[in-house]
Length: 149
Image (cartoon, rainbow, N blue to C red; front, side, top):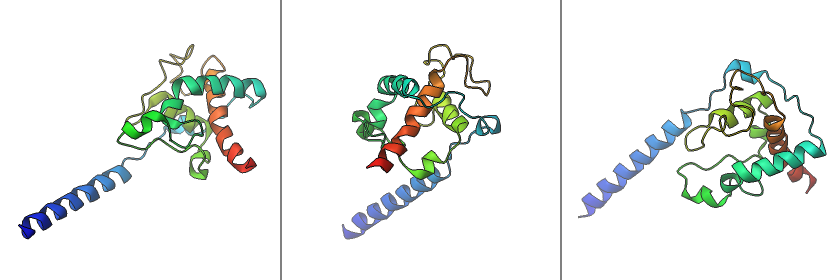
């Protein structure tokens, strides 16, 4: 009986190790044309207010009020939502954030077709409206909120 328990434990450990390794080997690759994009929308009060409204609608349930991945739906997911306050996240280019919002990854859906006026914006641009830029500006504001406290 002890051998069976030990064997089961070893199998579970090996399975967990492989799952962790495969998770680490699944980076979110961003095409080069997006890496170089700069957000054309200034991070002014109007942009941040619009971005907050959009964030509340599209992102809040998983990423939470504080942007740390602590939304109500986060506990039901297999992968923890990204923490927007981390330096490693904030160091990404505006275009990388845009691409990730548009394309999705793992359990995060892509929002390209859900963002009004931007259905054709996967061409490596911020699209025809301010909306994607507003969302990127608001997501960037989480790091500034942390620095102020």
